[in-house]
Image (cartoon, rainbow, N blue to C red; front, side, top):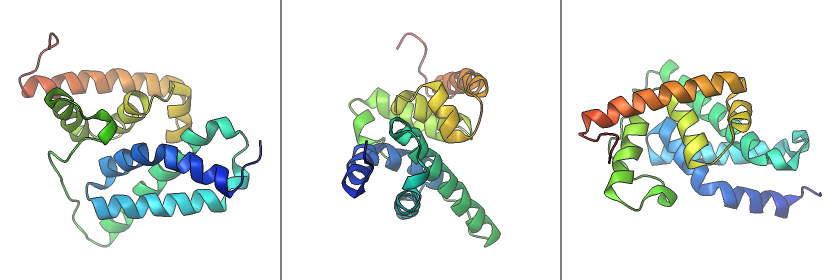
Length: 167
């Protein structure tokens, strides 16, 4: 399979909504999220030759985006720029269809790292645990434990909202 400019552009376009959701979960502000997306796309394109398996593009691209977001957050912290908190921002378009999904998305975004990221990649982006592990730089067993803990934390967050398991 030839990984050229057109192939790369098509793969990025397919991942655009997911990348936006993930970047927003880290950066909280749209401008910052879009900047990180742009930086990660450029970095991925410059290093496309390092992608050995085209089937792993999704997790590879998310890994680059996660690192970009973390780098930007560290840079802001060193510069003394306070972290923004954007409560009740819209869920990614693919995930919005009901009020319940919006409440769920807001609850996911209130979780700390790494729980927020593994939930987004696993449930919203449909990555298998092995690919989540690759994107986050952890082991699959670690991802499974993080998902287990994330579900517990999410359940507690939803209970605060008045949701129970039967809804």
